[in-house]
Figure (cartoon, protein in one colour):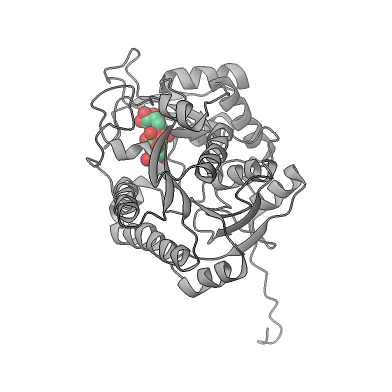
Length: 361
Ligand SMILES: O=c1ccn([C@@H]2O[C@H](COP(=O)(O)OP(=O)(O)O[C@H]3O[C@H](CO)[C@@H](O)[C@H](O)[C@H]3O)[C@@H](O)[C@H]2O)c(=O)[nH]1
């Protein structure tokens, strides 16, 4: 039995959250998941992703539809359950939307975090894994990117919320040594659980490469737009460090293990593979393993995109004892399995039709 038993997972019904819940259950943790369904799918019985996570693992999940901005509601959940550690995924994450609605992003991501930290403290819970992003590095000054690379020169509001939260965590852990926090900087999570039962189902527009690619391969969108062919990279297209979501999930279990054994106050780790893959390379692998055809259209660079980014993964290997196991082929195969088994994503909540008889319902 792991030393941390009860793990509260915020954003547990989301893409990364639900995969992480599966891995946590398999590692023997009890999971209390919360989600407000802003970025995840809700059906008549709650979260289809979490119902399927229960099916995959044969274990039960305690779930609440709850919002971090509703302090009394979150407080009541902490009153009810003895939480040993929190994994905090819940956040708004659409880069474009964040530029249009900065206050919404600051309120949701920053205030949500503040509420959570205050409630944790009042319940004597000081252990947290925070879902951060390689976006905090901005335009890389060197590659691969180590955790000591400068942070903060970010061009979008979403990224700044991650950066501000990391700064907040620094101040908090410096002021009070009871806190024990790991911030995980994700590179580009893709793929899906190998069962094909859970995967990424964006509730907003498809803007990320892999979900868009799969929509084109399914014939739901006519063409994949490749943003930029004149980057200073071998084939001219942008390079990213794509990481399988199941590897990412196991990184969280490794972080929990470290927190349960050592008082580290605050540490940050990159979660990536250490390998850069270009847009063209990813499309080629996807077409090869799925046998699907992806028509391409080359256009100018997307505003705010950086040219190339991949992680130095040595710190996570050394201190978390974690490294990725899954290949780019597996990322594509697993994503495609999820997408072909669920071409419309999860079953969505349907509004009950009201029957009106003689003006009365
Ligand atoms: O239709 C598309 C979509 C993307 N790309 C390119 O594909 C690469 C990856 O793009 P995307 O999947 O959108 O990821 P990023 O732009 O790297 O941003 C992701 O990764 C960041 C770092 O973790 C997070 O901050 C963001 O939330 C997340 O969207 C980039 O070179 C894009 O220019 C295309 O060519 N066509």
